[in-house]
Length: 373
Length: 101
Figure: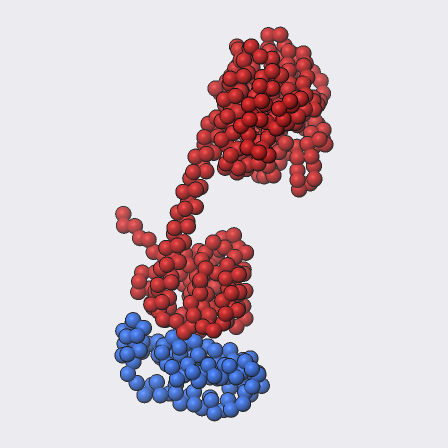
């Protein structure tokens, strides 16, 4: 099939002759031209046709070129379209104002059609180069997201761990992380962490933390020993100012003993098989910051069917509503009671739906891990 | 008037230039009417805007005399004066009519 790559240019000038002259010069070279002789029509055309470039006269009656460019730059669908403005040769203030408002270049009037053509070409080339750079970067970040997600174990791969999960990263390099550790047939570890920052460094650190968990969460070490050893290594390798809050829950389904190690993380929610939900509050230092960190610890005896929810602060915090997890976690307890009747596989999703609605958008990354004993 | 050189300078053929020149005459006559209304209504701003439009179009087509005259009218009107505009307008109309000949 024949493929045509035709670039579109919107020309805006209140003088019909100027419009016609530019239209003739550019259409001869294969460009598709849209013309407008006033600001409102120009904006409507820009919105509808999404031209590759706009040539905009500054001095127009009614809505001036400055008004038009200001409104185009405010619109999410038109703000990336390069704008070249047409201005008088001596109007320095006008040129500077045009640049301030986001124009990429100007053409002085009177203009020569071949100069217009040359400038249109150069700015389309620049625009194409910028767009392809953005596309390459976006593709790389998508690979990063895929790599991060591939590190996260799924319930289907770990049926004996009896867990379900909701995970959502707001940006390509998500700040939340979880892992499941198959320490033995009946002993499992559940780790949830929230890295400070959402930058690219974070995504590399998640790989390090995953490796450290695999090395140190073994039957030889107690849960507290495992976390302390991981902390000591992280203190050495974490970039300055970086840290993570984390919660490590260790369940021995044979002895029915559950241990929680908390490193500055929101409290785990316990939903007993016969009873009211409650928070397991344990205070402790964050992970990866202090050499002699002290972590909170709790040991509980559990029964089959008891459920535990480990989550990141995105579930219970809201910067918009000024809610921190210290008070946010308490206020959510009735919600856990409401979803108690659902199978544990559906609990995290139901919790998110309950809090944010089907179409809602959380303010931060979120991970919710539900574990059933 | 022979438009061959002007057409060549703009990189278009003579017929295309003739078409543009006709459009120029139409739009300029309309702008001259606006200048006259500006003078009658004592509105230098309106006269300046219409002069600006003529100046731009004339400059683009290479009609240098009209470009200079319209530029002077715009400069003066922007300064708030419409003195001698009756003379300017007559001169402008004469130059525009000469394009047809």
